[in-house]
Image 1 (tube, protein in one colour):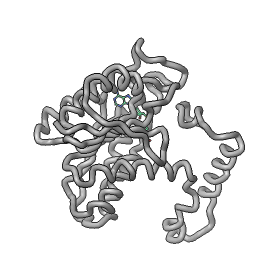
Image 2 (cartoon, rainbow, N blue to C red):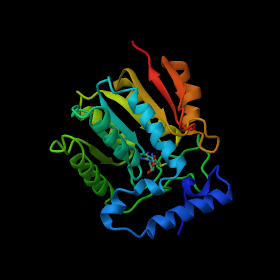
Image 3 (cartoon, rainbow, N blue to C red):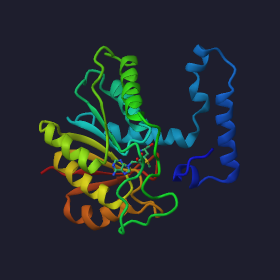
Image 4 (tube, helix red, strand yellow):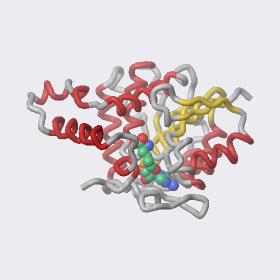
Amino acid sequence: MASNHESTRISYSSSESLKARSELFERLQNYQATPEEMERSLGLFVRGSLLARFFGIREVYEKIVNKPGIIIDLGTWRGQTAVLCENLRAIFEPLHLNRRIVCFDTFEGYKGFSSKDKPSEIHKDGTYKVQQDYAIYLQDLLEIHEKNNAMGHNFGKHKVLKGDCREKLKEFFATNSHEVVALAFFDVNSYDPTLKSFEMIYDRLVPGGIVAFWQLTRESIPAEGMVYATEIMQKYKHEIFRSQFYPGLCYIKKEGI
Ligand SMILES: C[S@@+](CC[C@H](N)C(=O)[O-])C[C@H]1O[C@@H](n2cnc3c(N)ncnc32)[C@H](O)[C@@H]1O
């Protein structure tokens, strides 16, 4: 049964291409090959628009390779961005074992919609809930990726923190006063959590560090746009860019102080 959130309900694709997407996925599930052959042939089934998302993450990652600091995936959901970042770490900076990734999510879906937002049937508290114990699953999965990568004996670098990001970020920075941030991906999509998290993260963002927003210009999901237009643009010195490969992804670079 289809899940009730915008990634399954809102699409720029035509019905033909959505049908082709289903066909591709069905072929993945029914592919005839040995497990070894299948394991190394997964690219057969990665559709172009998903590949563009991977490229967008890579584009942003490249900007912070020469910057110190952790990576935050805020609103990690199933953790795909975090997993790709661990793999990009291993490709672009295999010896950089201090590039910790910290994932934040309630894992119980959106939390923090208020009168500032436009709640709808699919944008409301609870959307994107995943199965119980998913935080533990994701923590393990990140470790397995680390073990697969160069210098894989150094695993267990990354953290998955479950709860409202406004509280968890506060706790994280209070108990980790040494941590600075090189890159943060934002995707929590309600006004107050986006604003409060931005304020906390920007205080720890290194000069030249990046904050990336998945939904900055989406009309149907206006929280990031509102926070940017009414707060960030006025109060924080930065440059802004749009991803070359994944047009919805926008990112700001903190100006040196
Ligand atoms: C659109 S999904 C994220 C998709 C993910 N970034 C990706 O690229 O696949 C939004 C996520 O934000 C999480 N979220 C929403 N509000 C939150 C809050 N206040 N604190 C922590 N997580 C929150 C939801 O649980 C959900 O998993």
